View 1 (cartoon, rainbow, N blue to C red):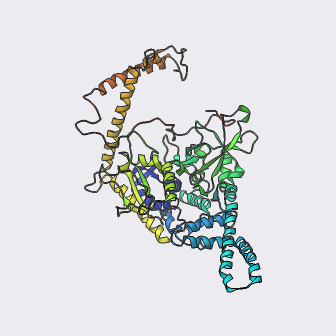
View 2 (spheres, one colour):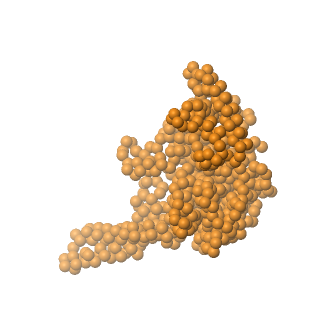
View 3 (tube, helix red, strand yellow):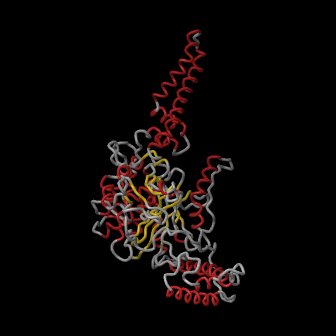
Amino acid sequence: MRECDLIMKGGITSGVVYPEAIHELAQTYRFRNIGGTSAGAIAAAVAAAASYGHAHGVPDAFEQSQRIPQWLGGKSPRTKSSNLLALFSPQPTTRPYFHGALACLGHPRGRWLRLLVAGLRWFWPNALLGAAAGLMLMAPAWISSPSYWLCVPTAALTIGFALSAIALKIKSGLIRSIENNDYGFCRGLDDHDHPKSLTGWLDDLIKRISGLQRPLTFGDLAGHGSEPDINLVMMTTNVTQGRPVCLPHLNDTASTYFFDPKVFSTFFPKDTVDWMVCHSKRYKDSDLYFWPEAEHLPVLVATRMSLSFPLLLSAIPVYAIDFSRETDKQVPERNWFSDGGIASNFPIHFFDAALPRRPTFAINLTPLHPDKESKVWMPQTNGQGRAARWYRFESENQLSLSGFLAAIMDSMQNWKDNEQMRIPGYRDRIVHVALSEDEGGLNLNMPPQHITNLSNRGRAAARLLAERFSAHPPEGTLLTWNNHRWVRYRTLMNALEEIFKQMKRAFEHPFGEHELTYEALIQRPLNEAPKSYPFANLRQRKFAYRTTRQFLDALNQWTAPSMTFGEVRGKGTPKPEPQLRVMPRSIPSQRPTKRQSQSKPSRR
């Protein structure tokens, strides 16, 4: 089978698009790298578990994953709602507010009526007290001079006081209940009232399709070769530190993390927490344990940390030490991990290489386009897909403050992903699946037909990708795998040419008269300043000098005016032109190795 990488966007219930897409791609391709955010992380975990199960004797692993949308659209015997909605089980303290928020979702028509019914259902004692207060205020008027004319003001005052009492209860209790539930309506863990909530369902699903009775780990997926058999990566967000983090490689140059088994037992099944404890070490004499190595981290934990949609699902508390504080105050403090989509909802940069050896497919979820009838779309020519994405928040040119604020949040969240989708060599491997306002997203109670429609679009999207990048694409296909590789080559070489020109100018022409040239910096004595990151020995210094000279000689030939990868006689590289930039590595370039010691945190 051919190999591919796969990246899936977050979107809460929009993730029902993915199971059919995964099953369809698995007929032709073997997944090597799989990544996602939020709901895309669930799909990534399912794809990885199915790939592992298929390779280890579970013949219907992908077929089981394919049946997920059908089950989600079915009726829950306990709640009489869809299984999809039943997965989101709020805690008793947040349940009234959750159902009030749920009433606000869905079609705008009838929203206020739904909200009123939910308020009366969950806060009827407060409504009765408010109504009683209204009646007591009108009682003197009825006693002194009873009249039919008093019916209207009495009814208005009674209803007004009842609604005011409900509003005051929500105002006083909503924020407190969410804070006490770790910033979310639902923790996602199985409980006695709801034995099929999100985390428990996902735990059962991963074990079933992987064929394991214990937690599936990233080490299981990686195998024992020099390269991972299946490389699974998910995005989460450390909101305490204000940065994205890639799982399973949580420990990085910025922080070493710890977890509290008692706290984690409120988020994850017992066997998952026990597994983490058995594959870690206690931190000093505290209740905390070092975060497990990547190979021992359960896939379920990483998935839940990526899927922590703000307010809907509780954030996950993990501990770290702030080494910027005074020494006596350097103790583990709580860090809150929330949804990966906060930082990058469509991490198309995962698994990127200068020149690709296999296609990296990406499935994007997008609102319906006003002029495109097709709900599954890919660029057909090299020039398509360059236009910027529009966020239309006005209705027939009517100003909307809520829409404007939502557009601001969308821009803050997705601007990097939106820009990267336009780059040549990226946009031709993205398939866009369009959803209407009442499909996906926060529509937790979608009717079965909507779920079926989205699932069918996922299958159609996968077929587009598989056909286009197959060894024998349909006749007339322009954006083939070879075309993709050619575009990536043209784009890369032009970007390298620009950066090499800048390097050549810096090497040959220092900014100031008395500045050392880079050549002089390389050849200075080993004990001479600057002493940061010195060469290990004279042999390494000679190697660096010789290699740098050879590199500069090559640049002198490359940057000649008559030879360029850029614009020549009106013909240039693909547009828009990308630029190379230096960023911290988010995904290790090689298999993770164990830390030398877990007795104390590192100050890396």
